[in-house]
Length: 263
Image 1 (cartoon, rainbow, N blue to C red):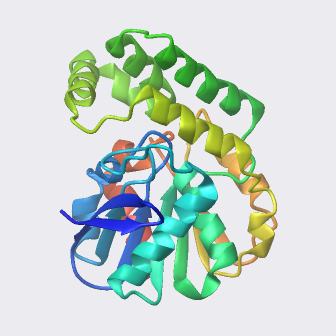
Image 2: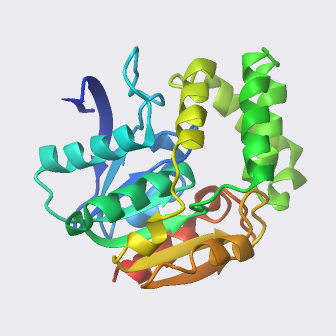
């Protein structure tokens, strides 16, 4: 699959499907593969573009800056490289903040915007959770224990009703050849903490769909709706039986909500 030399890094991305382009921007500690459950439901309707953010997946960095601004610049450079003047864009969690930055700075590049399980203002408990998770990795907690702790904040309670499913997910995560390193997770966490997105919603004119999981422990639907009150042209849709990782808990319902909005 292709790599793009841009902004002093090698940006890995994939393109699947045909139709109106749709860029999917992943969240913290996630790469393009994190969209896998929902991608088959999206590709019949869109040309899906899946970049790996700086410091994750197959986009590796050495001494290059890992900032939210740089990640937004990477997406714009990728659109230029692909010859895409205007695209739909979907960002999950931290990827939603990146998408908001692009929508505020380069509105002419977006047709429609979808923000999933994200907020311009990270509440104190969520900040504490994120900091604790990265500190546990840096402390060398066993991988199985760390992934189990991480999953508690990502998935709906129904996911944990099957221990076999949980164990299989942990085994898959441990076996993933492009897993993020603790150092790169720290760099992404620091980048997210350093970026102030609070003013972005009021600057965005693009028609926007906000998706929230009814069981999201990090960003509740009520908090998400409150934090986007200044966003001019938007609607909020809450997915039942879904938590923070909507595209994993309810991939088909998630994709159908996206496709309905884009149509």
